[in-house]
Length: 267
Image (cartoon, rainbow, N blue to C red):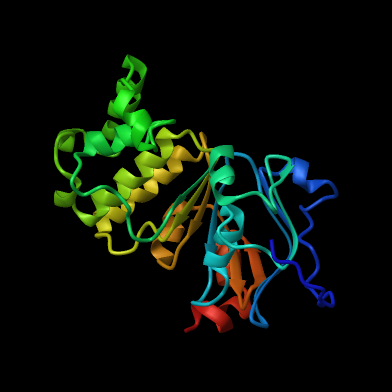
């Protein structure tokens, strides 16, 4: 992990719902986070917490630090200073692989599915313990595994495409398949990057419905630019700008914030 001696910057006051020992109160909690790349400060967050089974939306202009935030949570990027807590444990120096094993799943903006495999085969590979080639040669799906796969595919309207190679799916269907694959691993936290990008209005509405359904079973962080999609999610919104938390609250509240209008919504 990279560590640097830095002068503690002047920060905005902590939101009042971040209490002492908050790493035990939230599923995900970031404290005094600084991330720098060659002298450029990409993140500068005093305190940020996500409750268990909460759906939180993060918005902000390009370069605001949204992806970097997901990168430090998933272990892809080291912090320069600060601590990252997940489910009560300090995971600041934990590897990306081990963080995934602890229950952090991530869906990137471009769906990553296996085009040559069918929808069902993709789902099989997503089952716990199936990510390595050798175990897959010997693993047999159980009745419970099959029931879970079929139930999930029905939930995302992909049951009719069960034996269809993934290459023939629409962009929206590929998004739903990848989210479904993540769910197979039973993650505690889902990091979802721009799930509405490139979707039709109908696909956008269905994706919002899916995330809202999953909210009671998983903690979900959504990075998004589509404001109509954000409204459909009807969840707490955090606005980032230049690596800092600019605003936090309901969509109605942040839309009326003069700083947010100037930095992002007014563009």
